[in-house]
Each structure stands twice: as C-alpha cells, then as structure tokens.
Image 1 (cartoon, helix red, strand yellow):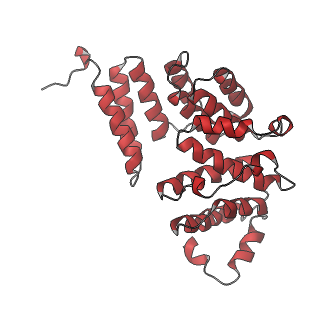
Image 2: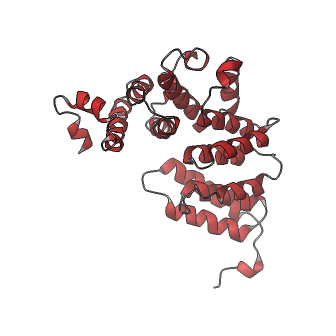
Image 3: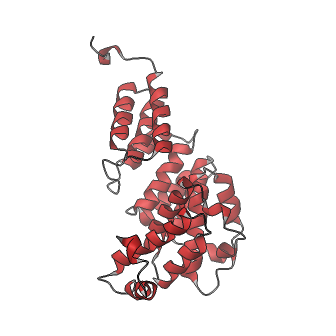
Length: 270
C-alpha cells in the first residue's frame, strides 16, 4: 500500500509536509523508510537520500538512530551496504550547519560498520573527529563508540558502557549496540555476567530473539548448558521468517552449546 502511494502525483511534496505534522509523522516516517528501501532494492546509492529525508523531518537523535539502524541492516541483507556509498568523513569532522543531516550519515556509517563487526574501523573513524565536535555527539553515537571499545576489549570499555546506560539506557538502539559490544568483547571482565545483567534491562522485549541469543552465549560461557540450551531454543522460536543469516548464527551457537558436557539431571528420557 505504501509503495503504491509513492507513485501518486504530488506524493513527495505531501510527504515533506506530513513529517512536520504530529498526527501524520509516524506514518510519514514509515513511508520514508519504504522510499529508501526502494533505492536499496534497486542497488542505488541511498545513505545521502536517507539523511536528506531525516533532515527534512528535523529528526531527533532517537528517530535518526532507529531509521539508520534499520536501513543499515536492511541494506546489508540486500547486498547494498552503506559502506559501498559513503566516502570521506566530513559528517564526523566538519558537520556544517545541517547537523541533522550529518548526524544521520554518522549513524548510518557507524551502524554499517557495527554490523560488520569492524570495531577498529569505528575507533579510527571517530578518532578523526575534533575534540570539540565529540562533546556534541548524541547518545547513539557515543553508544556506538562504546560498542567499538567493548568489542575490541579496549581500556575504558566498561566505563563507556556504564556512561551510555546512564545517559540513554531506555533507548532500544543504544541498548542493542551495547549488548552487541559486550557479546563480541571476548575477554572482558565478567563478560557473561554483564551480558545477563544488561539483557534484563526493561528496555528489551522479553521475546527479542537477538537479546535471547546473546544470553545463550553468556550461559554457555558460564558452563550452564541447560540454561544456554533453553535460551537458544527460545531464540530460534522467536526469530521471524526470511532471516537465514541470523538463523545460521543461532544454529552455530546451538552447536557450541550442545558440545558442552551434558548435565545428567537434564538428559532426555528415552
């Protein structure tokens, strides 16, 4: 339905106006998402167009983070990553007067690197930003910086995690980025315990398959086979269709869990 509306004469002008009306804004943002997805599906460059729409909408950081996160993941699944189109780093070092546009590009760029587990690239990119610019970063950018520190077990990683949670721990994109970094950071002190603690944060949906998957890894690392197996099976049940790459990740985790020594009291009955 939304895709059909975009073919209606005058729809783009109406959309540009709708994003500024409180009653139409959620629907308009959904249309913008579909519009950019069309570019992604067609293999066209898309990050700048997404940033332009977020700028037109005068999007706050939460709106920008949510759309950028979705689009970066969707584009990766469609083999049209943002990283194939983003060049330079002006959106980090010289954002200019349109800070909403620069923020959107920054979110898209860093999210795409996060989904490729490129922690060092994120750190190197952010290190190029002037100190005074870093003080103006939004909470999602700081959470992605913390993700990179966590994922590479860098000094100060857990402190960055705690600061991000204190600042924006009620934001789903922030919490997912931090949980991802904890999960990736092999060797972090009390890694498994911190994963389980963060996964219990009220921001997470109890049926979120990615969150449950992370807890399965934590239980496995603690040697708790039964809890790990229950968690990964719950994640598999909760995972939606048409996500073969994520399903493969979950199946690999299940294989690692079942390789643990079996606990006799949990043996299957025959």
